Image (tube, rainbow, N blue to C red):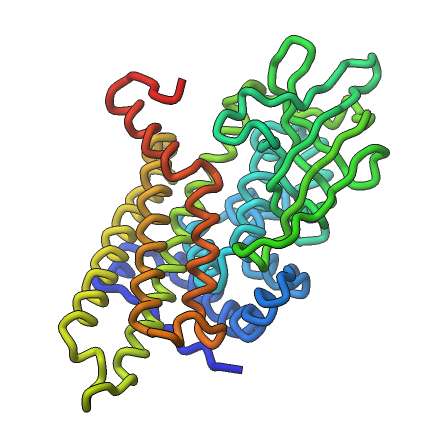
Length: 392
């Protein structure tokens, strides 16, 4: 079992922009990842298993809804703290960060923002502690980038609803206790519902044979005449803007998380290049390797500055959907390119499980697609600057 020797790069002294609380939160998450995630994650990835043993630890470092008020079991932290936690977790593994992102931004966030007081009291404390795990049902087999075309539907039966349809590519689905599900009512309006495991007609088959996010549990949500109590509807917001608001929060967390994956690849490549001897000296002394490493740290630093600024705007409730979209797209693309370059620095060793790089690379192939594809995010920026939607 290799020791986690990670040292975080901070080329522009960005720590000076963080509060003491930010650094305490980040360092606690960093040490937990080194102690609890790094020693087990390669084996978990090889086995394609989510390590359920870490759920309690994720809760203890505040990874589940860190910005949720303390009265509902959250830590009451700000948005930069949330981002830093996601950065450190994804430094360990994107699949583990996905689990935490879904729990925080796609399950706890909509209950907090769109739910009734009774729903907040019932679900949020248990989700914050990890006693309950959740998932988010928006994507359908025929509707990914166009969620407004969903066919999952509810019918009002008087004292309850009947839910029919299916969702796919759902993180946490196979073990989730509660699912936040989006469906159209008879008028075609999108509504949010809380669907609990054990409801008759609700099944969550697992998705197998993934080459990416192998430590994240992925599945489907199948609804066959599921009876949903009226009190399980999210009443404070509906329409497509409701799930998209959740995605803004999730994409923000991804923007931070991708930096963590990039930092891990860079740190691994830098350490290896200093130790690997060829032609009588460390390969770090050769121009082409220095070019790779110099470009990596440059791109990481640019992403850190972009994302820190976005965090400030989020704290001030001024971050726009388009700004979040740009940051998510830039940072994941940056991380994937760094993973590929870092793999080349390591040569053949880069494809082995002895190092984290190939695992990060495979994971990032999913991260660049989910929560809005690389291309769709480009068109969101295009729409924002021109006022003309290219995806309609």
